[in-house]
Amino acid sequence: EFVPHGAKDIRAFVIGDRVVAAMLRVSNTWKTNIWRGATPLPLEVTEEVEDVAVRAAKTIGCEVAGVDIMETERGLLVNEINSQPGWKGLQSTTQVNIAGEIAEHVISRARD
Image (cartoon, helix red, strand yellow):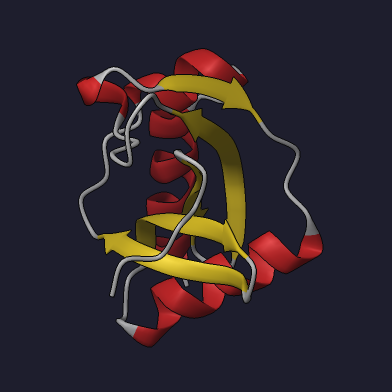
């Protein structure tokens, strides 16, 4: 099903039970991948985005995931869950040390 989304979407980076960073990706086409030329913009994470992203990642058993979310007339819709997400655009846009966040999570889980 094609879902109109205004050539933009949200990438929420989930680690464990939280979204550590998110960005809005704006494109000239329906494809909003950064490597395809979309522009990344910083985005403050709302409770709704965090809830949708974390639930989506947990549903498929991912502790680390890039969850792509579209804002539509029907509300927030998950478009894709990436179990091996890239974070170059996200890290440069948000200034969050994604690798450091992943490392901290792994160390914390190892201690549990």
